[in-house]
Structure formats: structure tokens, C-alpha cells
Length: 41
Image: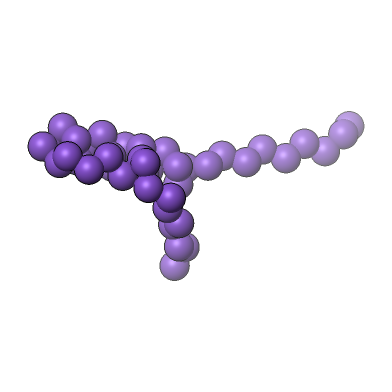
């Protein structure tokens, strides 16, 4: 059987969810338009 690797980018999803919540609460800056890095602790 050939080995397969699955990578799920939940960091990108987290940024999208955060951006939507910010926009719903009245924020005018859409953080999805800003290059971002998420640092793991």
C-alpha cells in the first residue's frame, strides 16, 4: 500500500473565522487581506 500524507491547514480556517466574527461585530478592517503568520507555542 502506498503511503499518503494528509495536511489540514486549520490555521487558515482560524484566521477566516476570526475575520468573519470581526466583520460581523462592526470592524472595518478585513484581516484576510493582510499576510499573516500563526506561531505555534
